[in-house]
Image (cartoon, rainbow, N blue to C red; front, side):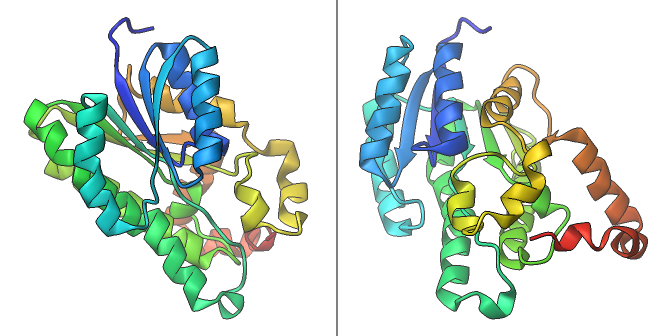
Length: 261
């Protein structure tokens, strides 16, 4: 465990994986900057961090509100005193056939999962560049590597996150700023409250769903041992690799699994 006091910013920090990341960061000894739309839940997470003996600041912020993000980041930066790590965690999904997905939902998903992530990163990056240090961790998904039925829009957003992450890694290769992606499979969080309203998909995958505290721990391990990607669980990533090599064959033998939603 590091003794250096890091400042770790986490978007989507009010529940689910974001909350677990905040608690894990507090146990690490970091100062945690919590960002999310729901101010009440954000303050509850702040209290949990402080109950662990950690320190945190909470700022209600909607990453999809692009103009607000750009104007508020300098003020938040001044108040908290800097940034060492940015974990872009905010995001949501909605599982449905494309024909059953309202255009408004498509726009909202891209606004949060993609445009919001990019805009937030762009807003904090000058501060990292000035210090010539930092680590950007984007929470993507195995869906960004292997798309499945009823997740066309969600998978498209996560494909975009992975493309953005890889490009940013190249853009920053001559700096001391690291860029990583975390690609988890399904995690047992409130994500499914909206993504899978009827709970049918969640019931099918319950035996191998990831625990959020395990994903949070694996994510923060990147700070000590940086890698370009962290894939969870490993066996699911091998499936994605096989799909890239033999897409037609994999769809033929595993097509039923790809349509579980």
